[in-house]
Length: 128
Image 1: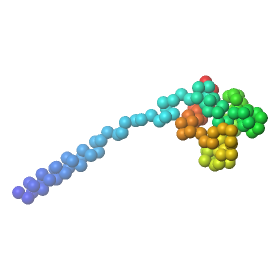
Image 2 (image 1 turned 60 degrees about the vertical axis):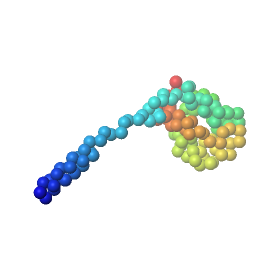
Image 3 (image 1 turned 90 degrees about the vertical axis):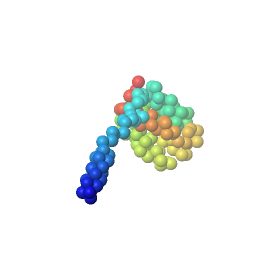
Image 4 (image 1 turned 90 degrees about the horizontal axis):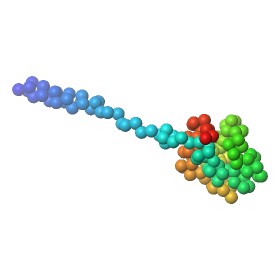
């Protein structure tokens, strides 16, 4: 009798523990960048115009560079400064862009703008 009870308990234990590894993996959820086609012309140009290339900053009059066009950004894209200043050191109040001392433009980019810029960088900075 004890042997039969022990065998039943062992069998029940094996059934319940064997099924626990049969779980399906969680469904694949694409990341934001995988669902967006971000280009300079469609999403990035307005961000640059309002946050970088406005009058008194990177419009060719004050800060170095004229960022009113894709061609104007080529130098800082190619040398890695765009990614460095806008993404990598964005939390630095002096080095991150836009800097905290900028009084005529936005103080910080929104999370959505940062995501769009990161997607644009990941895709190789497409123009259109």
